[in-house]
Length: 610
Image (cartoon, rainbow, N blue to C red; front, side, top):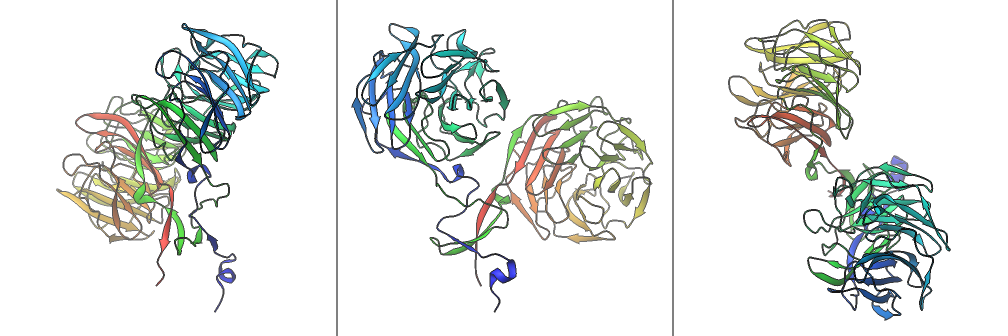
């Protein structure tokens, strides 16, 4: 019998745990030793095995208490010289730290700076501008202090060289109560309370030693002294804080984007301030408010070695005694809100992917409006030539076609999009509205069915210059939707035949075949449903009454998965597969503009041997 390695070219790894997407994704919080003095707004730095917590607010007044952590318990050691709270800090262990600025009695900000050598605190050169509730990064001899309260410290930044502070370039978004991590030449600032306009922010900025650059925002907007850990801008944790309530959310930053990972056990804000931990592998947070002042400590740990998760990865989990494969976890996927289109509408045509889509036309004013989605926002671009709606779309955000529509009553007009302009092209052979489309670009696509004026079964193929009639589909209908990225493999589903239908047909390049029906009978699902002929997603529609129902097609059958947040009919859709989709606009009891994105992560599936 041949060996697996001979057949596949590699051996199956034996692992003691499942694979994960990143080191942070394999991490979790666990309880550590509590502070002797419960407090909030303290300074703190170090790691899970060697940390320091000093100053703060114990419920009244100001604290000078300093506690050292050895990995299991806190011990009170020499106090800081100046009692204060809402101070900043820098350092890497319980033997080396800075206590920077803060809020002092009887009630004013201070610029005092103290250095810890493992046994005592020594006052050293003051910061230039007194402040509290700022952010910090670095070590005892090379630190960065940025932002703070009150005015004018919100955007100010100072760099410490071990003997003096120097003002350097300000941050782009002035704020206080944010998180900070990194070094004095490679730091990250995130979240906080922005000034102006005076509201919480998710904004993230990276410092390269000379200037600040805005990058990917946090997933959860928050302030109130967010917890932070990390010694480099590419390896950061942000945790806790306050939105409209206290939160436990933890996020990992890789230098460009944030990913949600395991939450804190105790939601809280205003815990010890400073880069407390190494980042994705190590973090510690002591004290805080939850909703009263607490002294409990949590430690974040993640595997120092991990096996990256990849689609199709096969391994043997020796602990579980099971073979496993990494797959796209579509049943576990969810819809999340993203930026709304600029103009609320229904009967909108959609095409492209979840990160690069085009929305054109619609039953609104003007009916010619076109918008482009770049993965974060919608931008109005050049309008359609023909004021019609209910068109059949196909293609990408830079190469698309829309055909037919309600002129009223029935249109044969077609237009091609080149990424900048719409150009009128040859008319389709059968004028109709509410038709489906699928295809790869403005030179290769397909439109099918619709109303003209009776229910239509006409199919037409576009080759970039002309339309050719093709084999008719089996069931004439309108308000049908299509999926497919080529002219040889596609899918049309549901619609209206005089009553709502669940019928589905598959196209193989020459003929239509009826395949498994959807679970929910409907019409007017998202025009531009996501996916291909063998891997697709249908969402929304009228049943009658609007539905949020979402179903996944695996090439054989339909499975109900998580619903849209907003039930809607006659909206637009885009997406490359059943794992990645975009839903936008549509009709509830009125035209809506909101949009939602569907994303499916990778997960490990146990393989059952037979």
